[in-house]
Image 1: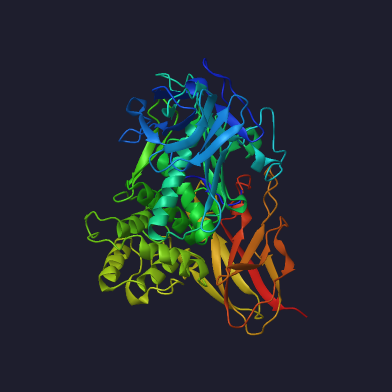
Image 2: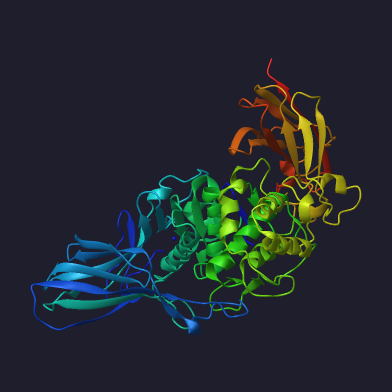
Amino acid sequence: MRVHRGQRGLIINSGRAALLTLLSTALTACGGGAKTSFNNNAGASSVTLSGTVNYESVPAYTDCNGLNFAGTVSRPIRGATVQLLDAASAQLGSTVADASGRYSFAGIPANTTVTLRVRAELKQPGVPGWDVEVRDNYVPGGSDNFQYPPAGLFTRPLYVADSNSFSTGRAASLVRNMTVESGWGGTAYTTDRAAAPFAILDVIYSAMQFVRATDPDAHFPELDVFWSVNNVVAATSVDFTAGQLSTTSYYSDIDSLFVLGDDSDDTDEFDDHVIAHEWGHYFEDNLSRLDSVGGAHFLGESLIASLAFSEGWATALSAMILDDPVYCDTGVPGTSEGGGVNTETSSSGVAGWFNELSIITLIYDLWDTAVDGTDDGSIGFRPIYDVMVGPQQFGESWTSLFSFATELRGSLDAQGVALLDSQLDRANVLSGVDLDIWATSETNDANVPANISPLVLPLYTDYIAGDSPIEICVDSYLDGLNRHGNNPGEDRYLRITVPVEDEYDVSVVTTTPTPVSADPNDRDQSDPDIYIVDGTGPVTVGAGFSSSENFEPTFRTSRMFTDRTYVARVEDWRFDDAEASIDYPQRICFDVSLAPTP
């Protein structure tokens, strides 16, 4: 749905009624960013202060063509930390807003000037627990200088929203409600966009609660979310500190989500499905298994197996979390930019295991209770969840629709099996007892020509470690003008068995001649890469991804065992390279071998 890669939040002006405060760990939204109401009746020396904290949420139009600011609604800020501060900003109390945004402080000194502060964080220490923070990645005048991740990223300012200061008075009880505003002035943003971090936070709260409804003991490792009004789609390279993003994306190696926020380019803070989709990748990475290579992908396109499954899973999960099949992604606020996908009915391109739309509708229709076409039942979320956190995480193969559906099929009763098979049939994917994690009997080759088909299916090529080199070819036929390296045939999967327990020296040598061209980018030579994994860990036992031309320097794996099956992914990075020569060959072949150490 989004464009993102697996490897690699609000600067506010002071309002009329309050001062902008920038703390070492917090950025404060004040004045026009938060409005409050209260009541009190006079009398006591200490006060019970209570109320609700809310934020303004802006929905998309029903056709997803833009944000509908006229339809703005108030939603509770759920699960966030609420602090009570005195006039010197010392903390008088701290609590957590409940599922209705309610908070309460007892024993507060009467007749004291105080401020309510809501922090854009969700905190539950221990196991099970969670730790989510929404921070600002942007540094004025700053640059990453190619450092990844940039220095100090995880101590960047945390977003908070402050009420105007008020007196506790001498009533026994005082009610103070607070609403964090969107900042929309009718045709453009005119005041602080204070609601944005809390809109993002609330989707993540919904996501965790959706999972916890099935597994109350689910534990959610730390997640950092970065949003800024300066976050824009980068014209060239990604630079987090300068707010230059590929798009709204989850980065698995730093457990972080980055969200677009430049209102002249694209904003995603109110695109609930987009945030939930990226959280779906976080779920894969931390509660299940994320084998996706990430990168560019387009609806209806034929994609490599792990990428197609990951994108399909994340979009289907977003619709389940929000109980809404229409996935909206809007563009510039105040315009009709945007589009949507119906996770029940959308279809485009060639249906199959390689099409994220096929996977979206399959997974969503297994869960939802609406009857449409062959979708005449529901297995609920429990079996889907159990497969994702169990065999999908620890299976021998790379993750794909085949690994997911095979393990799911084995866990269902007869009625559930029939529903799954009907959805696989609709998606033009092998169903029934011949389904297995390796796609052994699959025949859907994405409608490629006969000379390309052997590079698409079988999905795995068998290789015995220690045998003579095996020829592996990759082909960019399906890439067309996209040249992003993510189509079937461009990444090849190996299934490796080991006859002798040992460490192995891995060699990948390009055998296809790649003549020097006149291309000014000097990207006309092959750049082979290989990644080898013990899926039952899952543990990487070896990887070679240097920039050496026409071979990958020999490297040694960790010890490999005879009672395990290993998988490898082989690619030519030149197919991923936006600066590759326009004359680069469509097909490249390698000799691949794993030799026992001397």
